[in-house]
Amino acid sequence: MSKKTFGYILVGLGVVGLVVSLAADFIGIGSYPGINGTQLLGALLSLVVALIGVWLARSKADQAK
Image (cartoon, rainbow, N blue to C red; front, side, top):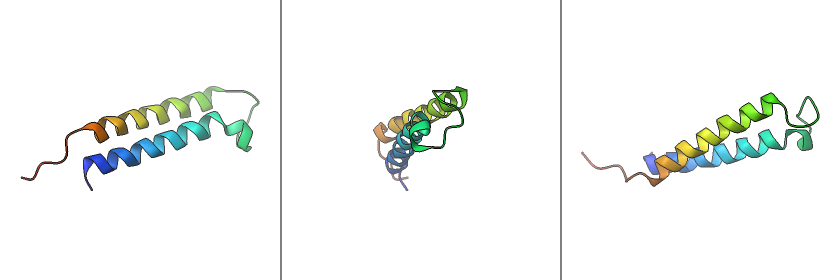
């Protein structure tokens, strides 16, 4: 698997994680009403994963050795 493909996968996972973290109360998995620390931590980690994915997706293609 190339870096670019892995980057796209990370972007997708990061975006899904971000949406789930921020919408936890609406989809019924939130433990407290409103945004709490766990949701913010999940959103932050998801954002970091997505940004790493963007960085990998924008990197140059793997060069043959």
